[in-house]
Amino acid sequence: MRKPFKNLLIISLLITHISSHASFGHSLTTPGDPSTQVPQDGVRSYTDSRSKNAQTYLAKYLAYTFWVQHLPVSPQPDFIQFIEPKTPLTQKLREKWLYLLAEKNDWVNFKQYYRPTDNTGLRCYAQMARYKLDQKQDAVQDALTLWLSPETQSSAACHSLFALLLQEHAFSSDQMEQKIAWALAHDQSAIAYELLLKLGSHIQDIKMLTLIKHNPRQILLVQPGPLAGALYLYGLNLMLIRSLDSAITLWHNPHTGKLLSPDQNQQFLAHLALYKTMRNQKDATLWLAKVQPAYRNSVLRDWGIRYALMQENWREIVQITEHDTIENSEPFQLYWRARALDKLAQHTEAQTLYRALAAKRHYYGFLSSIALHQAFNFESEPTPHDPSILAVYKPILDQIAEYHRTKQTYLAAHMLNEFSMELTKTEKSALVYWVATYLHWTGKAIYLSTTDEELKNQLVLRFPLTYQQSIQKLATHYQISSALIYATIRQESTFLEDIKSEAGAYGLMQVLPRTAKTIAKQAKISYSDAKELFYPEKNIQIGVAYLNTLHKQFKSHPVLIMAAYNAGPKQVRHWVKRHNPKEIDIWIETLPWQETRNYLKNVIAFYAVYQYRMHQPPNLSSFLQPF
Image (cartoon, rainbow, N blue to C red; front, side, top):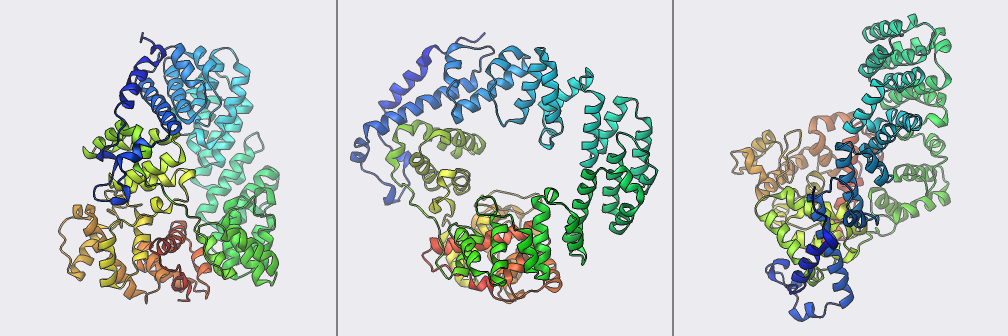
């Protein structure tokens, strides 16, 4: 048994040592950058309260790291005292410990020290503890809710819980049938088969499921029973994938009304309407009208808006968004409601929505500012550059720097993530600035500032101007805007130099080796091996040369250039031929690929931000001109 960490004596000794060495050294400054050099007088003038708070947090963080490495196998007073206040670090530590208790099957202590959490695995283990401790009925009922949730399907802890309850026949037949119906509705026939076999009394349903999987038209042979509607709906959905017209024919069969419940019927109609709108079929509006409001989820509503945009049916958009308000809706819905109202000469309400959107720094906010003829709102705030803010934390930063220097980037990243969890906003800003300027770890600095709500408006951290000399030189040579180059890098890789995508694209501008080979030959750039694409200068050089090639192909239109950079020139030419409205925001919104839609919106917004960062007047007119 591990000995308790009595009163955190070791931590106290560490803090005493750190306090005596809190003078600031070069390891926290940026070499050669006068803006980050602070005289030692600045360190000595550190306020007592800030220093005291920093030392208190350092003690807490060191205690946290100790306990992470020495999790007690049973409750210890010092440990329990440490995790009792709920903070990000103590919550994370508590959850690590609870997993250890579950691994040891210590359900008594697990139940005592468990606290409500969003952690899916622990939620399942909590029901396991209740079940093991003879609170079986309540545990099974709550476990059923988890069993019918998509988020638990990939959790090992939840699989253990469900396997135990199935093994002990804890679920009733009705509960098992609920899960089978859920599995069929979510196209998980393997789960349905497994549970039907466990029930034993559903031999006919097993045979029917096999027939339907082979030929969905066999749903007409389904006989009334507890799972009849689920099997019938499963077959309709399968047929929808294989033949939309055949699925509609089956739906019109009198058998449908006898076997599908109203809920199942609406589920199918919502599915069918989504297929119709995504394929821009002429009768999509008729099918959308059959779907009751409660079954119009956000995906269906959004595609309904896109379908109406393809037809430029502004009244339909107003109708779809009639319940959208500034408080409860996404920018996508609000913007298109505003655009529709504007088109219908309802300018007062449209401007109210535009003003709400224009207050924010995003794609729809910038478009709304243009509609209002006002300047963009970048919501920018200054970033602390004073390294003395981090003086007390020098030992931690030295360790992070050493991990980074020795290419142990996982350890460096992990330590940064945990150490920053409870820093003050000023300290977090200074830390991220240090990561960017001293470690030159731009991608990690972007990650830390983007994932922290308090740092969301610190544009210096989130939109860096790294490689500025090289980018400006290439921008001049190829006549490509430096803001567009930066926006591309920010979107493609978030400045992670050594990233490789699943598609095989490399580096900062996510260049494919085959593209690199072709472009390098055309542009007379020295290139011989894909590994060279991990070199920032080489990657940017080839990436910008490729942008220049697309620039020539698409008559300098930045939307088409960037769409082609993402989806390929051939695909973009097909999209332009398929739909070429005069208003570019409509073209972007009605692209069939979600990835490219989001890509273009991000690049356009990032372009404006980078213009702002480089002290250029933000101007999106080149993006919004007709093709």
